[in-house]
Length: 530
Image (cartoon, rainbow, N blue to C red):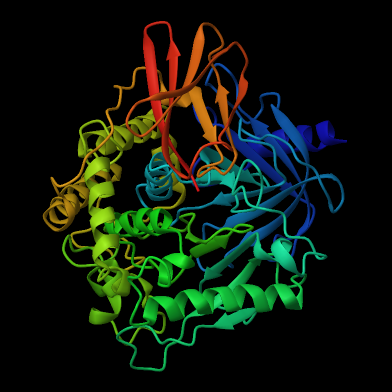
């Protein structure tokens, strides 16, 4: 039946008239066929993914994967280029964990349109940087999408933020976990627009003039299944964090906010949001989580289409100023950032630690080295331009010089202009942050220059608790070493397997390095045990 569906689809594709035609591409192709009008209600549909080893794909090629899915719109219909949520099914409404586009097995996926992001890479770039800071970031693959015979353009196919051992690896909080240690995790919740399924902060955001409040929304467990004791626990925990942070003794390492909040997580999240100066930073698409017996943590990053200088709203395109102080220039905005970040900025030890981490990240060859960031951007751009994907996308969606999100002017007239403008923002933003944060009063571990392609090695979960998994695409003569922050070898193992595991249970919480050696090549990746 599936083959018949896609045979009919292939014939229909030949006669489909659209602004852009997809005949061949170097990107994977995702083809969706719905059985009813696609809406914000999940309905049965079919998926076909073409991803040939040759790197040349056509809509008529045999599928690397095809099957049944639940399909719905994601984020409503605010933009003509819609985003979608997908659930892989074995039978109607029965989820099926499977690996798609070489991503770890799961059943919940997203297709993000990135309509207002003319670079088509702002989400990718944000997640790439945050992951290399040692944090879990949702994994995405660029693809081209066809929906019901119509070409839809370039999309990001990838992971929805979800509790899972290969995604956000926190405890599975069950309905029966309503007391004791079991009640303490794992929770995922958000600060975002809409919804009443949650609770409000008792502390108003800075610069509020219209009675603005901070609203927390349940994400995991979902509002429809979370138990009353669980609601009461997570609210009380966040209330305690906020009370401690807002109190006179907030800098006290015993009774202050550190009793409830994970310092390194908050530091990395703040660095990432201030670097990208996301217009929605801290106040929308803000994910927070708490593991069993763990502290409150910030992240993962999500929804960064208008970051990196993409809008002039509230001075978000300026290289100067703090994203957490958006309310200082836009206090009439109905959504403001919580007081957390402006208060943390006054914590002397927090800022010392933040400046040291930022300075480490800025070292030559490290994640915030401007040259390395630009190499990543250029690599993505080259990939998108190799077989006309950029041209097809913007033929289908001719939005050059069309205002969408109050973009800086003069607006970009083509993709090369957009990339140049984004690089210029990054260059000037980092220069300003260097003046605020760069310090020479820190001691850093010695690292080894990377030689192995980073795409050959995947570490998860990030951060880790007891086990760090090391997945390798290389198999021969591989040695895996665990190093302390000062470079001391703590553990060593030889590997000839794609899948490996390092047991961290006997080590203290902190920063470690996993060193991968293969013949004369070396890759060092930082991990955090929390």
